[in-house]
Length: 117
Image (tube, rainbow, N blue to C red):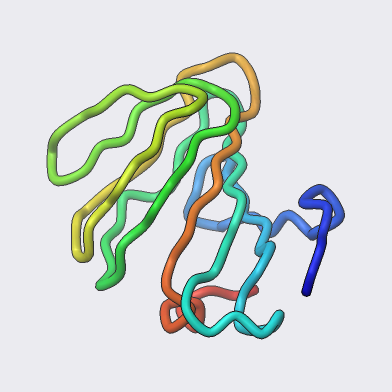
């Protein structure tokens, strides 16, 4: 069993992102074998890079409002929204609110090697 407070986990910023960072809550380093759990934080007016990769995202929005752009389609979201981004979909998340956006993002453990965590 593992229990962590997410704010106790280091926020790692992404050089290609505008005001966005990741807290790696549970990954293979914690013994995860299937899915990794992260909290993404995006400052007001910030965004993640526009990118694609061969794995899916499962997202649950905790705080903030914004939009996700995937494959040219834009969807607005807010707290309580669940978002699925499929494998190889070009996507980006934008924070349109005046507060730091926070969302939980789950990806396959096999995908974590693509990140510095």
